[in-house]
Picture 1 (tube, rainbow, N blue to C red):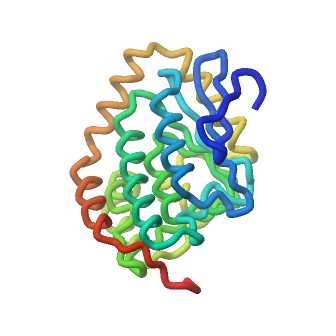
Picture 2: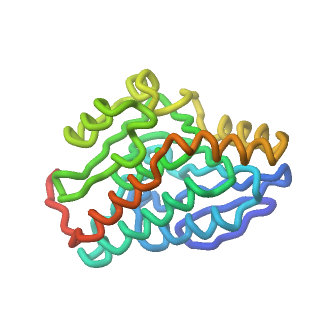
Length: 235
């Protein structure tokens, strides 16, 4: 990826900026950045090992932030990857780093949850978000949505599994900003955070996070741990 670039996973492109932050791009364009073991584990390792100030998570493919679970995995592996993703979300919530998602195209299922586990969400006008779940026997997104958009809207998105376009996502608080090109804006934001007092930044993230019940994430993860990985085709 240029200066400071290195790879923890072939599915990711990673660059450490000398200003004190890390950019992580999911790089599986052939599958619209669907999530497999390499993506889930690579993201977690990349976040844990990042410079302390901030992290940008984006995509090398503007068509998709992440299309969610990799449908080519067998059921048992898909279920295992789902559980690994919950460990990733927990790591993102607990990390002292400010995690900024640069979003375009589709963010579905696990990709949508990766979005809400981030601290700041900057999106292009073509963003489409969808929380797939109950149709597959899963509870998806209920741990993080209420603190962003309220209880009623959270239930609506989880139960209806309907697509949410960028303008509506901004109006309801599902994303924080719209940008013509979200990745450069996310990088500028990360550089800004890196210039702030690190102790104050850590405290702000911790205090804001107190409004999110981490027990909710654990309960949703426990329910989904019983999932066999099967996904009805055609949905």
